[in-house]
Image (cartoon, rainbow, N blue to C red; front, side, top):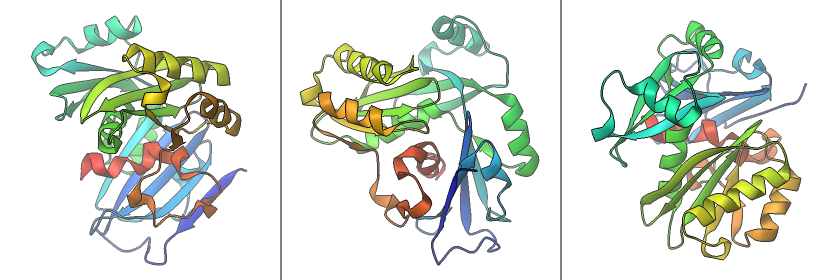
Length: 266
């Protein structure tokens, strides 16, 4: 079984009310990250194939707060003025051609003056809520938007997350969101094509942007292909992750969907 784990010496799974637990469950892989509530530093990471990570004995026994992202996700951003109570399914149908089954949820995105409406796999959600009844669901799209805006600097920033069969992309410039979308991707050339399409659709060129790549299913071949077209590219790491070691067995940007949850709920 493929898996990896890392714990900082300060992490004690039985220490009560000291931790935030972030969980990512996504199509063949799962991961969890523990953040210290005192300063937000990540102190533990565990990942495994399937849902094995969620069963791991190293999980905090009594975290103060818990959040989770489950993939795949169907979502859309709706400006606050355009969202009428009861219209949520229609907005999803306009984007996805129908309303997927599952619990329909919404998450405010204050930085955009918008709401993220989303549906994800309710079977996985039920399993997580059985173990952590106080867990808060989060949409991957809102997480991507926040992370892209937080990372953009002098140049426009392209943040991409490669999942099992889709790639989520958020592009931000000067603190503003230019694009947030998802694309079907089954090959390395799909990843490249839709990343280039998103950049060009935002009125930009590859040489003008910083690309930060991540994802549960991003391969080394896909990284290499992206680097041929985006010279200013790098993993989507973050300074606050510095306490974690890559000895957990995989690049940390693979777990962006878990590592970036704490800023969304803190």
